[in-house]
Length: 420
Image 1 (cartoon, one colour):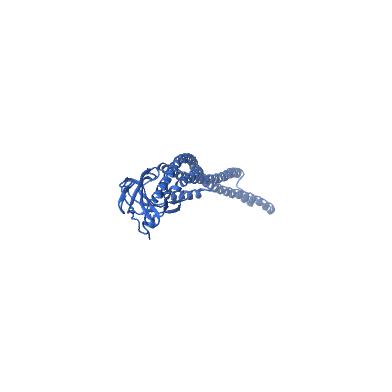
Image 2 (cartoon, rainbow, N blue to C red):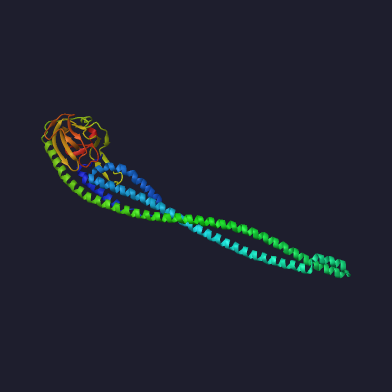
């Protein structure tokens, strides 16, 4: 895990928390339809960055680490809630549009049904009238005789051919009128039967449309309730995020004070290192330093020395040593023979041990072991290369057992990799 140099720690943590607090307070406006995809993208990015960010949280106190985890979780939950709200509001809008379309279609179908029923009423009245007319005609025929029989009687009794022709024309006209009335009645009755079937079909269609519209109304009302619940959830999470940000800011102020104290302590240590440099006599080690130091623990490197960009907050900072994987209790070995010049507890670095290994290519080399669980060597002890000096732990600002190993030349941190 990463560890800032003493000179940069205060500035880095201050900037980290300042950006963190700003991001926590500021939130994206939620537009239910237009920003749904953006919210999905943001959700993906937030979850993608959480895991990598947690490693860098060892650069701050356990309290701030916990506060940051809570804030990160609150932000992720808020994005999830905003995404659900946008999706629900999108579905609600679609349901509202569909409802308007279905209502318009239903109104048109009802209007057509009313018109068809009015036409049926008019047609029925017409058929009733025609039947009445035919009934009167039948009664008249019964009273005055069938026109066909009258025509036969005229043929048998007429004496004047012209008079016969005139009388027969009248009879034919009466018979044609009677036949036409029957034909029209049959046609109108057939139209009534067709109209009744049409109305039955239209009634079934209207009933189906009413049923669909009612179902969509239920769905729309459910979506309205869900949208209201989602909005309440978002409001609650916004409040939680603000509370988490406020807590992070409070802890930040506490950490800044700790870092200010650490700067004074680091200045004292550097002064001590430079004072010891004046006591060194002789050339010491001179030459290629590759492999000069014995590997302090057998574990793999989990974070190298160097400048890097924070995966979420975007600031740059120096990781002034190498982090080695080292379960708690792992023996830590002296990188070279030398003298233990200091052992003490720091709220930031935990238990620390400083080992002076003498002059290396004209500069005093000091090895620093951090986050120690227990000491084997103590101040003033002389140790040989490879001797156990302490045991790995997770004291100070650390979220897991490991060794943060720093190499200093004349009190300035350098990359340990060039000496291992």
